[in-house]
Image 1 (cartoon, helix red, strand yellow):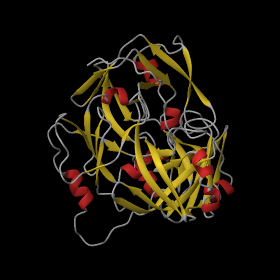
Image 2 (cartoon, helix red, strand yellow; image 1 turned 180 degrees about the vertical axis):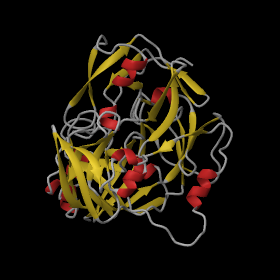
Image 3 (tube, one colour; image 1 turned 60 degrees about the vertical axis):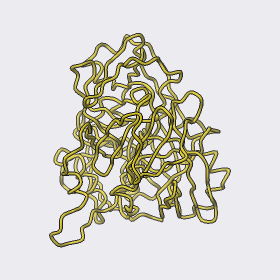
Image 4 (cartoon, helix red, strand yellow; image 1 turned 180 degrees about the horizontal axis):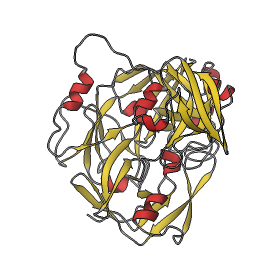
Length: 421
């Protein structure tokens, strides 16, 4: 199916390098089966396309009929976005493509390349689409890590109805006339504008005695849960209402490069009929970009909240249905390294430091932006499966890092940081 080019360029919305503050893993003891693992081991329904969820939705995909790759789905993205290294080795030369500048999260813009006038096919499972005549090409792996070959977004989903089942980790396209069953509840969602390229979701956030209520941009490319715009933070005086919050600064976080925010725990979040308690959130300090200045939304709704639910989204009407998933009652994080890392085991055998939370012990012990972590408590990054290293970095206890800075290496003795709020 061929689609006309959308009227707006891709806006890659944020939090690409993930703040590692995941809850420590624990068990209830005994030999009973883990319900979550049991759900994941069940056969998938007909037409289901499996995905891997690690802060983002990762799909095995094929571009141009033969180029196998890993793509991320992002509702904050319109067009196909391909990593420049992937493009150069699998598609064609990058240097001859025209330059473009895109504004995303943060106080800057990103220099990209544009592949105009050439359509690409994209296949996810048994579902294929032909892109418009614009494909964005840029250094995506610098932001998302070595696994990222590209991003597909709203153009692919245009006019379709999709089930995102986080409990069992699959995407399934549904017939247009199929209505969600009684386990789902319809939200008051809709299109953000007449362009019908972005979705809004009404939310109600309580921070102390202050209530922040309004439309949030649905951003399935955002690994965080909730990020409020700087304008919304000023309007609701959130600095005054978050005395136990902590400042966060990243030098590489999505398009727009540097960004700053304040991280805090909201007392509650109202989404449809549900009320979630003690939700980690943040508000932007930026004055430009997707989170700076006046926007037609007051914040971003990202994956740390959405993954608590199973979703059905009608990309023709803008309607959205939710039901609680297996992570609905997830507890807020207790320990973490409080460091943002980008996994670049493909080029430097390690994780590159891109950001810190205020008071981070490793930062105070000497860890710096741009350092490459080569060993953690005696183990090299290459020894860790993709999910195990995050679990390890969320356990209480000492933290010994071997880092590369310039041509030299050094050892940094630190500890995990208890969630400070």
